[in-house]
Amino acid sequence: MARHKLSRFQYNAASENVVERGKEFYTTIKGKWRESFFKNDNPIVLELACGKGEYTTGLAKEFPNKNFIGIDIKGDRIARGSKRAIDMGLTNVAFLRTSMAYLEEFFEENEVNEIWLIHPDPQPRDKEERKRLTNNRYLSLYKKILKNEGDFYFKTDNFPLFEYSLVTIPAAGFEIQRQTIDLYNSPFLAEHYGIETHYERLFVAKGYKINYLVAKNIK
Image 1: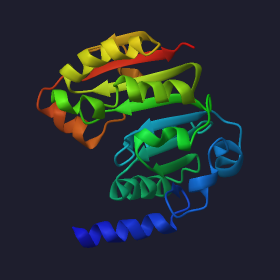
Image 2: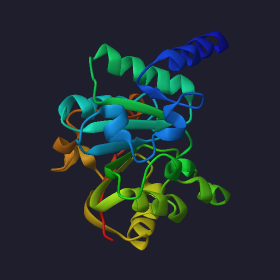
Image 3: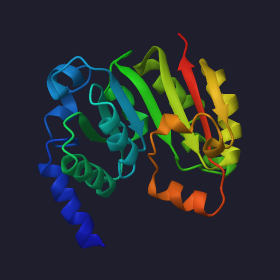
């Protein structure tokens, strides 16, 4: 396993669609994603804690006129997403290796048009609340970099996290537009274009319901 991870880290270092520590864009890209990286004026969409990039690449295929950035701290996951994008011939995809806590170091205020948060770690224990990606600290970061009336998409199999987020998201200044506790039996399923993560397929096969909401950033 260590050997596989090492090869993926080496892959990231050479990959042009990966931004990580040690590369020039890592310290210069803030506010310049369109002009410097994508070289267009298209909307920017983030997938936070993107894992292997299933949503980043899936959405990028559906929307070639948008720029997609998958963000994760795990280099081996980033490498898989990067390779997937290259194999699919997607030029509107980038991957950023960093912690969600440092988003302000890479994005200017109002630079982002949409944010997707798909099956994050629920961090279920009370003492882990500060790590939940829908706590107020993180939501305030999303709110700052997201444009006014930009959409925040959230999807989880964990109902307690969903309940928690139904409170924290409006409290942070987002207006929930639509929500469901059973995405696969709702009219909103089409919004996902048949895209599933590996773990989502496992969850659904075990009978878990998928919770989903869309909230608008109101400034």
